[in-house]
Length: 422
Image (tube, rainbow, N blue to C red; front, side, top):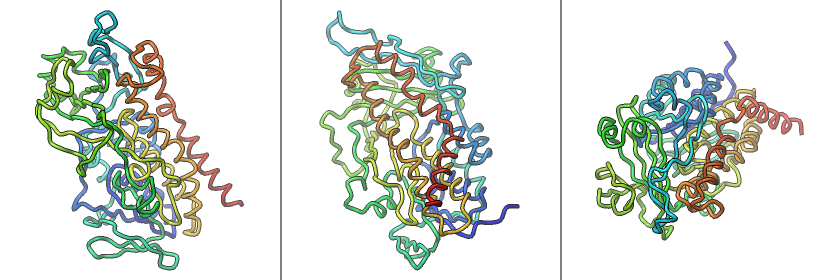
């Protein structure tokens, strides 16, 4: 059995990214404690999708993570749609002029992402699979981080409940409203807080038999994105095909979100008003979710503090890639820390992680916003030109999905080795 590393890591945040990191650290014989603010592990939101890159990252961190994913995953219902990410169609015409308009349901593009196609995992179910891989003595609950300070060579964590803890390094996995991000960048830094993306969304779950009766088998059981001016709607099966997940996105024309709450109640009338001309809706009363993302941080680490996942690069969901980037982060960071034999080298590992992960993960944030402009016919170069949209949609996410993760690991190791030799 490999020898345990002579340092201890504090992981702050028990979402998917924090759990995958913790599993990766434990598999590489790195002592760690996971501090979670909630009284138990829990995830909000019904579903999360992972591209093929994320599934490969799971395998490389620990094959048991990928096995847990396979237990939970729902794919497209038709075998011939297995590799399809989304079929794109028109949800609302872009023009009131009949001669220029495009009929609703006009087919635009079939976008394939490879072996897995569109995937959906219920967050809570996947979380349960991850928790099974973590010994019960590793997590500590009710620990909301307040302050960080140095105590000699150690990092001191102070929690809101008045307790303290000590570690050789802290990795912030505490989500889009991250406390560790504010500590690292400074409360007044322009990138310390997430910003409104200009879009909001209605989300709903509908029994599959109702959807099949309304839309037919193909549209109900396989993933679809319906494009339209200042809005788009995506649908895909979840819960092994028993339910359809619906997310209806809308542009907020004034570009502002002034309510402190990011999730607000709404009514079916609100949905109908926002999606007038889209052919009606099966959604009943639902919540409105404001979509925020992070301005690019100039660094993901300082000293013995490092950021991972949404704490580092929260993204809008328009490419289904945000959670996958957190898992890529966990792969690279756990691998780098597994290469070092002394706490003195932790900053070198963090620096190599920052060099490797920051450009790619921040590009995902930027291109995710850009994706929504294409779906909603707001892109200045494409507009409502469906031929241009088709060509771009079929290829634009390949750089995310086709990433060579073994090569990314080696580049990160090389960056750390170069740093050590200077």
